[in-house]
Image (tube, rainbow, N blue to C red; front, side, top):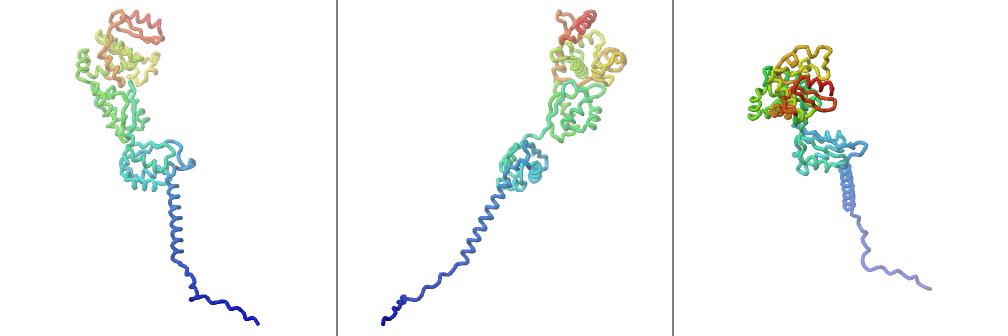
Length: 356
């Protein structure tokens, strides 16, 4: 009989079962949640700082105007509305973190399309373009033309400006500012008042009245009013700057000789018309007004427009004689594009018939 074999018992006590560590599992889960949250936040932040999509953003350059008192929050909101940035809050946060939130200045910030929030923040930290609106007053414009010119530049208040111009302080007895607002290009802040605008134009004209020039005008028998008045007539009559000294010389010679100046632009001004509206058949040239230089001798009572520097200087440096050295008294603009000057009326009529 064979006895069954017995399995030998291991030495020592049985092994203890391995215990699970629940705190470690919880920590790993928390870390995973945090990582996911950080990744989501980064992704969301990236989304907020990216340039707006073509469907929601602007594909054209945008100019941000910062006015006095505007805040970064207001500027950021405008940029969002214009489709330049996705999130005003993200833009403000970037600028606060960079320490540039206080650099926003009055002016114009030019922003090309496709900038992300960081690039927009860089632009807003730079110096802006000056916040000005430029307006050009052409030579020869009348007071009545100025309100529309300034309105087109979004400057001044047209209705009250017209009233301001009528109650000026010019250098002629009628005190009108006609002739004393210098034609040039002026930069004005958008908030410029009518008084500031008029003062700038008037002040620039005053710069033309140097002591030497005023002295030269007096030698010609002209005070400041007469000088500017005659210059305005030259401005209206001349087809180009080259003709101005010639026409100035003719007018000065006629004044000296006591001959009526016979200038069509003064007639038009006195009737409240533009030059091309004059109608000889309607009696415009025989209708007497203080500005009709056919019915009255001497200078009209004041300028008929605002002359430029070339016209003003032509009076002080006139061309007094014809090509043959005679005293120049008559001129006509021919259809050949030239000005024809004569010393006697018969020759003038011949040129009128020949060239007109």
